[in-house]
Amino acid sequence: MPFDPHPPHSARQDSRRAIAGWLLGVAGLIWAMVALGGATRLTGSGLSIMEWAPLSGALPPLSEAEWQRLYDLYRTIPQYELVNRGFGIEGFKQIFWLEWAHRLWGRMIGLAFLLPLLWFWVRGRIPAGLKPRLLLLFALGGLQGAVGWFMVASGFEADRTAVSPYRLVLHLGLALVLYGMVLWTALGLLRPERTGPRQPAGLRRLVHATAGLVVLAMLAGGFVAGLRAGLTYNTFPLMDGQLIPEGYAQLSPFWHNLTTNIAAVQFNHRLLATLAGVAALAAAAWGARALPAGFARSAVLALGGVVALQYVLGVATLVMVVPVWLGTLHQTVAVGVLTAALVALHALRPPRMAAR
Image 1 (cartoon, one colour):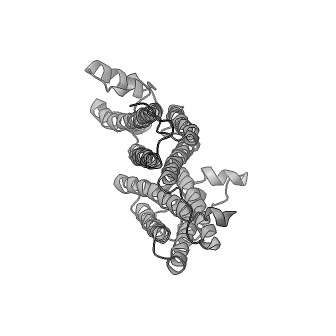
Image 2 (tube, rainbow, N blue to C red):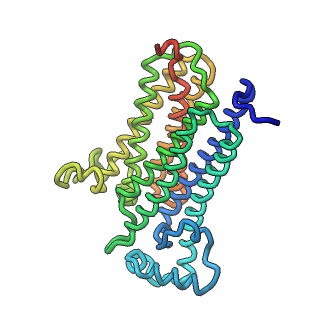
Image 3 (cartoon, helix red, strand yellow):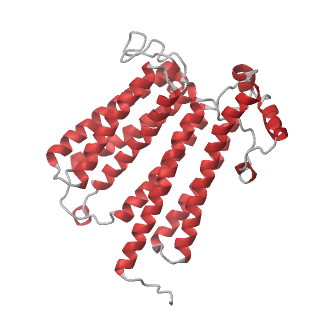
């Protein structure tokens, strides 16, 4: 059957839905990757593999000699000397497997993106205007792998037992950008039309503000994680009996407090999360009153609900002094919050004619 460069409308719709389904699957893999990364960080497993081998690293050690070589490498870094000294090769294997699974999952995401991309491309099923964006997404995925190694390498430096908080936030931030772009692209393919009644402009602005606060709270949470700030001030809502902890601004210049002062970093995360929660609940209440039953109303209500859930999980994680399972769940649901924000923003786009 000859190739038709101008398929009928129904075929184009089928192609858009197929590409959207593929991208949603990739987004799900990225979501799982963020969750796995949280578990890796919380268990201190991220520094167990001291080599970046994008191809050969897909295979685990296949002999006792190879296990011993990797263990000997690990024993040269400060984390072993200061945290895990003497835990033996069996202890090393426990942290190794989680980091290896994290890296393997990243490789799987690359293949899950590249192979269908080539198939859709060869079959001529990708809309011409979408091709540059898909290539950009693939490039960002490769960059994320390199940034991941850049982050891990910082943990091998003298006197360090964990990675640099700045590089951790960079790695997390790029993961969120990549996830958001993949999800937004899929939503645009599934719901390309922008018709229907005009939504309240004020509500749309409020949801935009909520999304911005959500992202800032997540990045602030990256610094909390990088500094292990969740292991102190384990009371809520006060911190050592005060609303604003003593020593909030003890560093000079002041901006250093925002990224390196444990008291300030944890307070800022609490504050941004609280503001995001208030904004999300206000948007949900407004949407419940002003929006008719349908996708947009459900999306705004879901945003309020998932932000409230994440807030409760955050408080529980703090007062329970960050157990691994709960800290991992908190990081996992954070991506759910971002998802809800993006879906709500997409649902509230103004109709094209009204936008003109």
